[in-house]
Image (cartoon, rainbow, N blue to C red; front, top):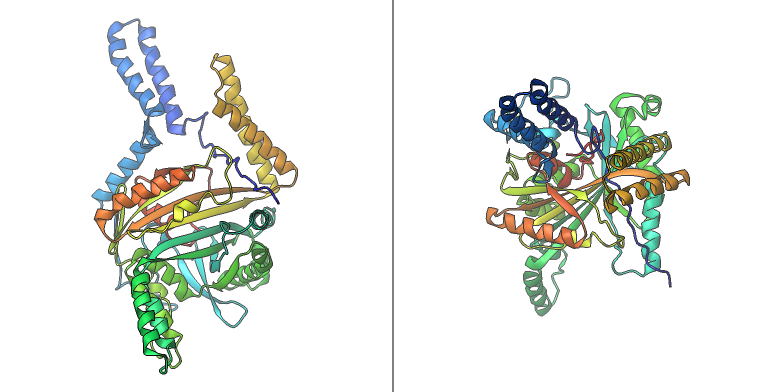
Length: 507
């Protein structure tokens, strides 16, 4: 029997300007050094009484930590948030009377914050249907979203488990090329309570008139008892194409948004075989209305019941009402407000977290399962965002990582400081990653963002505590995204491929 494979070696990106100091932190250390030298140059005790406290404050701001952030980063976030509150920029109200486009006659999408620039386009999927394409005109990105199913890892033998994980790794590695137009892949999963309304609606439509009364009664009682205790999971795969990387292909396909959509459709059709090898079954590539529905149900959980019931009813013969999904113009919330540590949207409250530290020890492939454990008081969402890196850039990035760590080790040696085991381990990981890259392995940047949503404010802190406990059981260190909850919600609660910054810096 095959032995289970363990995984590890995640390497955190270093965004420090000098060592672990940010640019402002390094400037404050330099300023503290200058201020501390002033009394020495003047030879004055009075100057020392003034300059010493100033230098001490600057050093505390540079090296101090507040809520997991450096003191200077925390102050910048706090000031920015207070300015937004004072100017009411943290509040969003839906513009139902927004002017229509003179060219198309349609209203633009009405989304808050970082999502305001997105547009949901419609493109033929090559199979007679319509594909919803999320367009970011500022970044030049086009994203398609698929609803997928996965048989899981917990209940299969070790050999199949290793094969499935290896196939997913091979799928990611296939995009670690210099000329790949796909620049981002995202896996999004939601775990939400299900009251069984959609199941009851489907059952009512499919019970035959001659069904035994006792059987109908028993089935109704079973659904009434089991329905409220049920939970559902939705899994989505988002594929993001860069217009800049696919410039020539887009030009050959007609140019503009039409050409970009055609290239994106070609890319997603080409990946079906690799997805099947990884045991991922594509249920459907979402149409514009269904993309909008995934956004709408995240902002307004109460709408899940109505939309699910309507989707089931729309499948019945002779249905003449509104089709499944939501009009893209109505995807956003009616109102939203960003707090320092919470995000209120319609009738729900959410808290978002970013995974700051992955397990330090070797773990098995099922280590993330506790994070999406069913809860009756809250719905959870998690987005894993991957950015494949080409060989040339990967070589540069890993060489830079090794150079930073080597210079830091040399500096510690010169100052007589002992090297910690953590620092020694990071240096070994950097070398092993570079060796794996040289042997043909792919390198990806990745991040994970989680969101927990409740419809009862009294349940929010309990739901947050449960999520953090489950994250600890998985070996993860979470950081609440203070001052950026709206950005965290867009990344963690929506399957739109958001969440990984372009530059090498964290939230």
